[in-house]
Image (cartoon, rainbow, N blue to C red; front, side, top):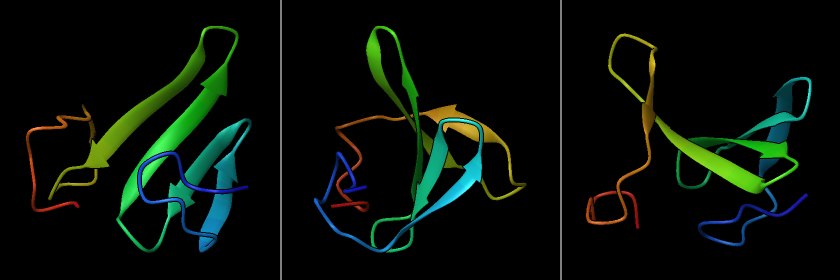
Length: 57
């Protein structure tokens, strides 16, 4: 499984159809509509990915 953001292969499964990328630190889920991408907040919560946040790229 490659990360949809950075294309890296350092990903791991964290739940049912739920993955984490160790290269860019995002969590993503595969679903019928495609892929939902989330940033992991400081408190561990998931926040909808903001492509304007260049600190991830």
